[in-house]
Structures are given as structure tokens and as C-alpha cells.
Length: 102
Image 1: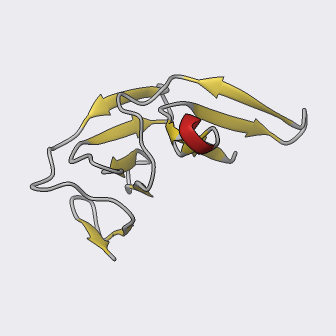
Image 2: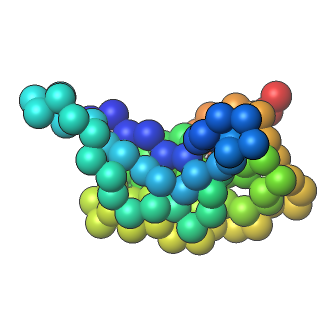
């Protein structure tokens, strides 16, 4: 099931980050909103950990991270990054390591 979290909403002066998350139901052909992330994020990155949780990092002017557990639908705080991170990519290396790069 495709999932979309965060991004930029609005136009011009109304432009800004969002913390909203949506899942797509292909059979119903509709997006359904579910629990929001703790922080509004745009230009962030996410990767799936081996246990199925998503690890979401950074975003414009953010050094925060969080985990999303699709089995519970809950977002939980992750470790603080040492600096703001945005516009990056990341990949899961193994059970405990994620590599973020530009």
C-alpha cells in the first residue's frame, strides 16, 4: 500500500511543510489520512528498517527523527541528528544502521 507523509503544501506565501500522512487504497481508488508525524517535514528522507518500521529523518531546518510502525500506526521519536538535514537521501544498511547522503 503506498504511503505519503509530509511534503510541501500550498502556493506562494501559503507554502509550508506538513506533518500529514496518507495511505492509498487501490481498490477504492482513494487516499485516507492517518496519524500525523510529530513534526511538519519537507525535503526529508525515509527508509524501511528490517523490522518493518520506517525511519524518517530531518527536513528543512530539522534535526529530528522519528519511527513509524505500520503494525500499530504510531509515530515514535527517534534519535536527534547532530545537525539539520534536508534534501538528502538515505538507505538502510542493516538492523541498526542507516546511511544518509546528498
